[in-house]
Length: 134
Length: 134
DNA sequence: CTTACTGTATATATCTTTATACACAGTATA
DNA sequence: TATACTGTGTATAAAGATATATACAGTAAG
Image (cartoon, rainbow over all chains, first blue to last red; front, side, top):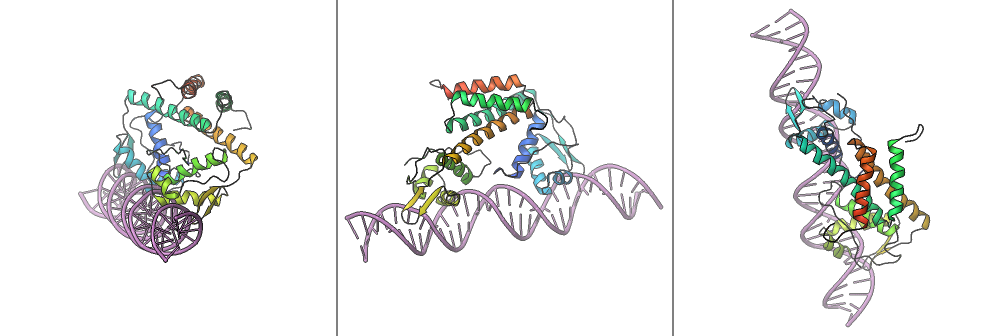
């Protein structure tokens, strides 16, 4: 089972927190099905170029949130997530990120038209990527 | 001299890094004039409810970047910032935040129309705040 | 020179990350 | 059913980054 996690080396956000946040998102959004057996802490750590203990902490924290079940000697499985929790999480996470971006614009005295134009440009680029560009 | 810094207690980003990032932004964007005497580390720390040492580290780091001049017994002053540096910084910081927000949307399978609608709603709210709402 | 303000240095506690060694569960094989 | 092997999660100790309190040192003004 391959789990798509993107680590930003330059971020000030701690490593375990980046992993936890992204894995939580994948689970709550249903991109990883209930009862899926996650990679072992060793396999996951190897893929992320980090320590086994760091992954262990993520699994432990998410188990504390009720998102994972873990059983020594067997592995770690994803738990059931209710639909209402799912929807709430989706909306909040996107709204939060957009709000932060707009705050950044305001703090830099971006005009409303300017930030709208920037936004639409980047949306177009990200939703319709051209070959040879990111 | 009052410096507007917003601390997010819930963020995983270290405190000194939040302060440093925002103060750097204020200086480079010219929202604090060249040669302005910044608050003393004690006064600033008191306003942010944090330790003197945390503010001290921020001043020290930004002095290392050439954005501040500091003189023992006298205080800490903002240095000169070139126009080209200013413009580059503004564009990059906003583009970066918008890109992150859109990535968050994509990772959550937000449709292009959906994220555009969300964005315009939040822009309207933030640029034209109603009384009684944030 | 005293006083009250600056920044500075040292020691301490907590958080983050790691390395290493250990204990438990499944499976093949005798 | 033993036994050995390979997989799993677990516990302990140590190093680095982060945040703090407290004591030290330079500067300016009375």
